[in-house]
Amino acid sequence: MNILVSLNSNYIYPLCVMFNSIAKTNPGESLDVYVAYSSLTDEDFAKMERALDGTDFRIHPVFVKDELFADAPILSRTSKETYYRLLIGDILPESVHKILYLDPDVVINKNLNELYNIDVSDYVLAGGCHLFGLVEMGNLARLGLNPMGSYINAGILLINLDNWRKAVTLKDIFDFINKKHRLLLLADQDVINVLFEKHSLVIDERKYNLDEKTFKAYSKKKFGEKQIDLDWVRRNTTVIHYNGKHKPWLEENYGGKLGEYFEKYKNI
Image (cartoon, rainbow, N blue to C red; front, side, top):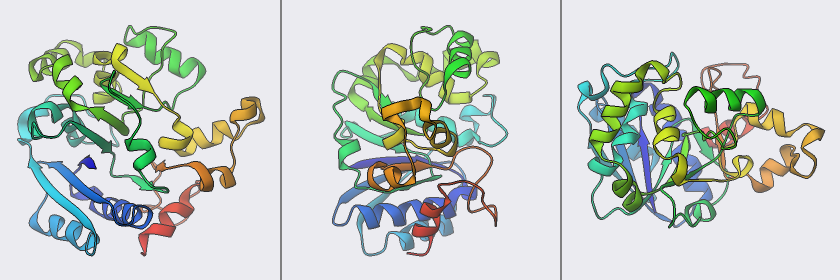
């Protein structure tokens, strides 16, 4: 199994918690973890190695030149490293045909095989959605996307690298950013949604990319058979995502309903 993360030193601690959660929920699995970075230190990588001690996980550092996305729009709560996933067609070995991209602010609650084995042979990528109603419609309209389509959250992406390499080149990506940078309110996530609009498989965000807002939304009765509660999450959700400005490792009294999962894995 191949996994990709991209980060700076500010996210080493939650990344190590994520590694703890993968080790606990995927015992005996063999994983190759590609770490895209520009400013991580030897001590940062040492911390990762300590978190993976006793596992069959291998870390592959992938250095990215700092200046590549110097002029790209950045959100206040993200960094330029979020753009590094756009380079995967060029910075990863040709021998890597499929990879699971994970933001460093996630924990894994179940074995990853179900997610990793989703069939993306006819797609570039698979991902879940976090937006609903007028908000989603607004993002689709802003980017000129199909109003009947879906806006995918790029924090968890299962990627068919062979199809990615066929669909776009690095020049295509940089040309798009240079041309449309004023429209990219959600940074590289916008880029991914536009470039792969017709090549994306929408998967169940309740199971594979559950954040606090999505949990709150699906907790409402109006979702009928799709309504969920914390017991459903414990039994069914593979990936829990702490996106947004509130983080359980930054707040002593984290107010989210899903904080228990970070607490569960941070001390393992």
